[in-house]
Image 1 (spheres, rainbow, N blue to C red):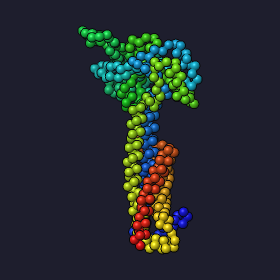
Image 2: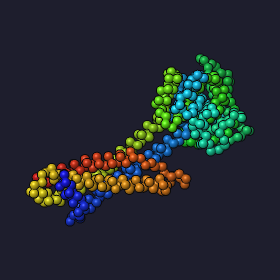
Image 3: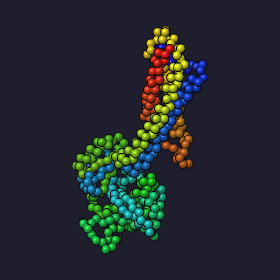
Image 4: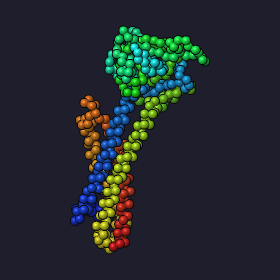
Length: 402
């Protein structure tokens, strides 16, 4: 192994008399460098965008959420609440009511979801920190906190007592009922908008928050009836263990979902995009490694006399083949490691100095992750090994022709 590796290093680092070979070798090395550099940059940028996208949902979605196994209503007794409070891994929990409603303000209407929350909700979620105008809910009067998107669609502001926001929900009925007046088909309440929140476009166009008693009165729900119960776990808590304990309390009447399961569609979309981007840049890297194959083949053709001399001196065909195999692996390894190192430096500079900005106040999100480094190294060396093996095989043909 030492003999082929020694010759391979001499071939790689010693300048050839043929300038064309030197140029081809430099181009091949630059191609590997650029491939490793771009692959890591893209993976780090996508990791940053992924975390950036999920950070918005983290403000809204709890660690765990128990929803009804069937229907829309989850009945929670005082005994069950007492049992939940005794679970040490649960830091806080909040009972919520959710339902589709119609919002009406002046002459404008828009569908939305109302979410009634209790006084513990702010300890489970961080949504109150997303309020950009006005204030969070108080108990002094019927109030709602509306999304920024809904606020624009309805042209509604905060604390406008001259024009109250109407919230309408269809009344539950049994069988076919003929309504002589359309208003008889809806339960309607009027309320004041106390605040406007902004999380992301989807949530801003969807949810209206209000006190749970107001929502239950609007929806005509019983004292122990809720839509879900949301949990905030202790820092070191295991979500699987807590889920088992909650399932034991509700005895199959509730389904417990984690934050990832609540955002299942978003996670699948991000994972698919990540895989798609990786495959595209791996294809680009594969094309770049064709330069390595070409460089080694040209080197074999140029060194035919040297190959013949080495063979006459006792080198076996496999040893000669390994010379060019090691040359290809050295070229791939050095180019890939240098490209990866430069990409890591650039990502660290972006994290510290915000070199690239999306807006004047928002730097382009990137993440330094060990798994991305590992992915790039494995990809580079796997493709380099295949390319080097294919190219080195030409040495035996060159040996036969000499």
